[in-house]
Image (cartoon, rainbow, N blue to C red; front, side, top):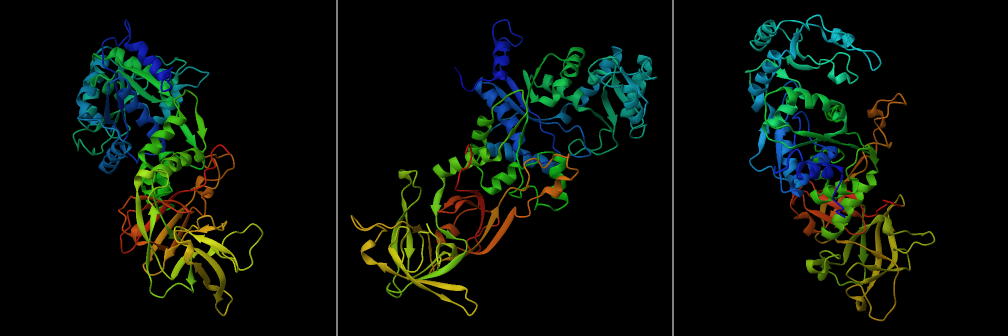
Amino acid sequence: MDENKNFICEFIEEDISKGGRFEGKRVHTRFPPEPNGYLHIGHAKAICIDFATAEKYGGLCNLRFDDTNPVKEDTEYVDAIKEDIKWLGFDWGDRLFYASDYFETMYECAVTLIKKGLAYVCGLTANEIKKYRGTLTEPGINSPYRDRSVEENLDLFKRMRDGEFPDGSMILRAKIDMASPNINMRDPALYRILHTAHHKAGDKWCIYPMYDFAHPIEDSIENVTHSLCSLEFENHRPLYDWVLENVDLPCKSRQIEFARFNLTYTVMSKRYLMRLVKENFVNGWDDPRMPTLCGLRRRGYTPLSIRNFMDKVGVSKAISTVDYALLEHCIRDHLNASAERGMAVLDPVRLIIDNYPEGQIEEFEFDINTEDPGAGKRKVYFSKELFIERSDFCENPPKGYFRMFPGNEVRIKHAYYVKCTGCDKDENGNITAVHGEYDPESKGGWIEGGRKVKGTIHWVSAHNAVDAEVRIYEQLFSVEDPGDTSDGKDFTEKLNPDSLKIINNAKVEPYLAKADKGDKFQFLRIGYFCADKDHTPEKPVFNRTVTLKDTFGK
């Protein structure tokens, strides 16, 4: 059994089999984002489904921007969307399209519907249209403009295009069935008037097609066989099919819907994400706390981890809520196998090894990746004074504490055994330095056949340590479902006040300081980190991607 097969695959295989609606045709899909915001983790599911499904059947997938609403669209979003899709590892080749490429064809299709008596210009206001539409239990009422002649509708529609009428004064509607049990079929709007410049078409148009009208036309023009979209469009499918049946275009694409997913401790509404950015709750669309793909990329997530996450989420007809821990599990799993190891101390205190020769510097070998023997080794440098984590020393330790305390011996990772002999304090009783003595026979951190120690700590040599900024990110929200309105609170009232902690006095080894932006590391005993876009060798900046501990499924 093909583990990667889902209900979409079953439909496609039925369609391309002998006697199927697309027998002999190449499978062709499309990813149709609206350029009115940045892509987020939810969009990644659609991207993976659209592109990977086409790949599975040796087909093609187009990238098409559905730019039918110039009020909210911008080339900034176009560029960001293309970057995100490429980052995920997908390629649309030479098949980059825009809905606006087809505005003239869409206009002609609308004229065709008018000539067939299947569309009319309506002068009802938005509130009147809503009132006339009816309810789920009551049929709608015909517009008083519904029976205009073909000639009058053609004239009015041309004058709409010519800019004679103000915004909102009239729309072009399909003439279908005001008593349909599907409200989407009750004479839906096809065109509206918008005297707004378009990011690509400029001032050429002052009328713009509605998405439900434009989408099937775009698919047909591009010979898309399977229009894969989220479940919210299931009730719009009859309109999709109606448009294709009644306009003069050759390809009768098939729409198939799949369920979106929700992610705990996250919002994925474009409106909510826009508010987070515009009202400065976060530091831009690529803030590493955001569920945007550029935010996840900046935080240190990898394309493979997100694609693996999507495989685990799966494709279904049922909307589900996915535990954020699963996403963390996927990135942790990938970074454990691929990230280089390094040593950083986030809350440093000096460890002075009193019996170590003054001025001596030693080199020790360090595993680049303990999970990958082929990754090799590199050098780390050891000296009389080291930085260790303040939490790795306790003057009066609790039971079960195996790190540094007076009289206890620990392993300094890769270097030596060191026995703690005491500490220095300031006038307020704060510890300013820890003291110890090393065992020269334990070089490399081991004594063959000798005594064993329970504690192992990481360190950075003080002689060449580099000051670094480390940003500790937690979940942006403090509740699992921040979009839930049953408590009467706005989602912004559920932000986690501890979602970002900035450490300005961290110490890192020079190897980490020289990293390139975007390089990923496991800081020993701390977690997985990524060199931020602000990172420079002179001022290293690292973002925590995820902790070491994996709690998924526990």
